[in-house]
Length: 464
Image (cartoon, rainbow, N blue to C red):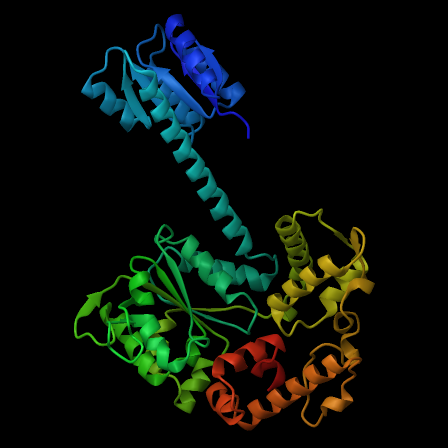
């Protein structure tokens, strides 16, 4: 591990020599300067990890040097020392951004403790910045199509406001990325972003998840639980697949939007919350309103700012950018050299109608990186369904009357997958694409059915 470099700016050579011995003994790298001007030049040239700065110096004094250091690099920790220490000097140094203020004569232990604390804080800040950057890359919206530009324009208008947003689009188009981008650019960006997948939580537990419960409020409630709305207080809550909430839960969510308060299960006390709601669904909520499965008043509350995310097949010009983005991303994740993609492979990827949208493309790119030999990904390295989309490979759209046996399956596993997909599509059509009813008819948990829909890229838009 490299040594931390400490720049000492002090006009007294005896102080510099003493600190040099102390710091080098403790394993630090020492850099010394006798004037403010010299110190600034060394700070720019040697990029120290911390500056130990005297206040009283001829020419440029320490507080002026501090101002210039902060302007040069506001993340650089500065510990100020002075033989003429007063409370007002300490306060002024702190206001200007000094990490600590030490009076002369000082004990070596006092200086070392201050340096360690300042360096630890800088390391935490750097790690936090690195993690945030990694999260931003992971949730980055990539593309240059007119459709995505319209989405980003809507995001830009919605983000600074407190209005609720309803994001609509097929499964896999990146609705979560849109929600996170809105939050990241909002006034609540420093607060929590709490995500809830309404489809993945069993109906009997979703109210407890959203609003919390008191101990003993129902069988199994052995401890008090704070709900997601409370957790998101002052931040943003993202209700994914909001179209799958029960009527009872919809009524409670409506109350949060109208009154700004929640009530835990088993409690009569209301709790005020300040939460921005962003919702998303792959359903047509206007059709759900006509069916009587979604509340019209809740729809109007959620859709103050509606954003429609177009499917990937309607913006093929984004495919090359997404492919390169995911190649770079997975190469960093696996610490490998990024592979080159041939034009023939890119052409095939652009021609393919991505039923699973960006999620399917992402998985395909990851598979190509792992399975292809050498440093180049060519058309031959693509899955058969992508290379020959008209040959019935992969999970292309099923048509009524097409039997599973008519779809070419080279292995038993492929035949089972094709058969299961055809069975699920048929049952969904029989039950009007009602997920809860279909899950009940085929005797499987609703959450499991959703996993199957994602696995086989089944959607009403593509298979209805």
